[in-house]
Amino acid sequence: MAWAVATLLDGGVDEVVVAAPAADHEEFARALPAGIRLVVGGATRTDSVRAALGAVPGDAGAVLVHDAARPLTPPDVVGRVLAALAAGAPAVVPVLPVVDTTVVVDDDGVVTDAVPRAPLRRVQTPQGFSRVVLAEAYDDLPEGVELTDDAAVVRALGVPVRTVAGDERATKITVAHDLALAELQVAR
Ligand SMILES: Nc1ccn([C@@H]2O[C@H](COP(=O)(O)OP(=O)(O)OP(=O)(O)O)[C@@H](O)[C@H]2O)c(=O)n1
Ligand SMILES: C[C@](O)(CO)[C@H](O)COP(=O)(O)O
Image 1 (tube, rainbow, N blue to C red):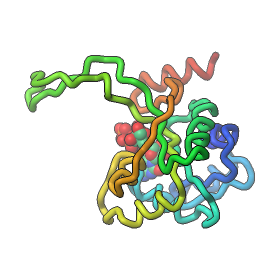
Image 2 (image 1 turned 180 degrees about the vertical axis):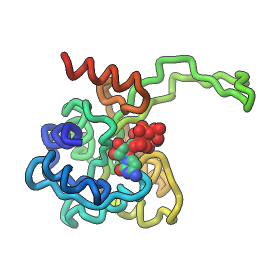
Image 3 (image 1 turned 90 degrees about the vertical axis):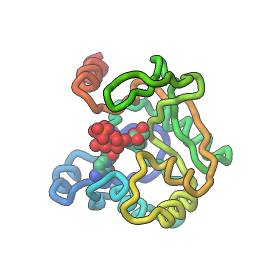
């Protein structure tokens, strides 16, 4: 969490709000730099983003939403997202191409189709938004609806989402191998 926050600050973000379980706040406060606001997160990512968004100052022009599970994101990625927002984009996501052949399978695991991969992208965080647009999109999202990222929440409002280059180092640490790669990166 501390590394994810450091990336945001190093990349040019002014203020950070962290959503975390109430039981962890004391420990998080010790690990984070002074001035970081902590709010109680929810049971799902969507609930946690809602909670954090509620603590964002009303005069903030833009908001970035970042995953703690992407702790080694280089600050450059944050810079690219901020630059696209400053250039007028209402919503921005960092992306990478899909490098493997990508297929559809049926319930038995048999390949039924291959998806043309040229237009596909893997979406990372931090994702950037006009604060007003993101707040309106979350207000409009019915309770209980879970979308996998914040860009999907604003796209539901019809807002175009621009892309900037992501970075392999911003990968989401999801499976054990991701952790092994992250440890290598840190060791370097
Ligand atoms: N209740 C939750 C769950 C997740 N998150 C945020 O969402 C990110 C992604 O979390 P998660 O869905 O658990 O990611 P993975 O560990 O990659 O799990 P999976 O992709 O298998 O769902 C976390 O880093 C955290 O920042 C959150 O704020 N509140
Ligand atoms: C937001 C995200 O990291 C973009 O790729 C991703 O959708 C989070 O998914 P998760 O299933 O909550 O890990």
